[in-house]
Image (cartoon, rainbow, N blue to C red; front, side):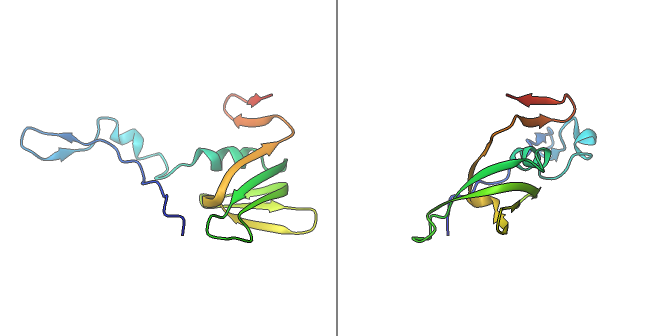
Length: 117
């Protein structure tokens, strides 16, 4: 397969003088956060219903080396993207996603209603 996976980030551990590690100082607030959060996934979710072009590369395939999917973003998860095309629905693995192009402004942060023009 691809072989170029990224490892999950880890939180630094404080070391006590007795040699034992302790949780970070803001550990109580970190417990309320999701274990893993993907910014791309969140941006795609905020832009559900928008028409987009998603560019994918499949490095292990000679027939499908690069492919563009055009359609409406229906759903985005941690490891997948669902696009409703003109003639089909696509369930795509995020690991092969290169980038996504939108014709409209991109919704970025729901708390501040930011968009990029």
